[in-house]
Image (cartoon, rainbow, N blue to C red; front, side):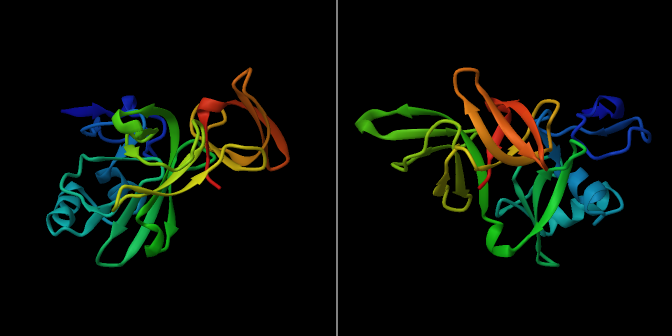
Length: 215
């Protein structure tokens, strides 16, 4: 089943004019973009779907260190994409234009992904389950609070470090009218669930649920 071009999420960096239909991702339509769009439209590594499918068949594409098996698979914010033949690695980010963008990274960074802590749960045996914004749930004794971020090793599925949500932390806005902007957290109001961020000298107020701290 395809998706009408005019209905694609605004985050997808594709032209609004063109063929009537585009590929529909198998999951995460709102917050993700299909591997096909990444390789063909964003990286220009393929001219068409056939070339993308061939690269996948040859096991040349990795997402978060895992072999991609379907061009409709969706990648989301801070996922990494690796191109085996050229040994190139990229991270999915957001541009100031509120579109998905790619940033070239080192191979050593390709297994790490930042995700926001959206909740915690105590399991049997007093084990702590940390629930992350990307859908991953991990068992860890790491001291990390809701709204902090975790750098997760996608190969071992173990957290490497906690990034506290606090003043002077660098944050990225991933939803709302300021989506794609980033800057330093200057003030936090837990009462109003808001944070003030300095974006290139301009102070903006954003809901805490719309930002993720990255360092």
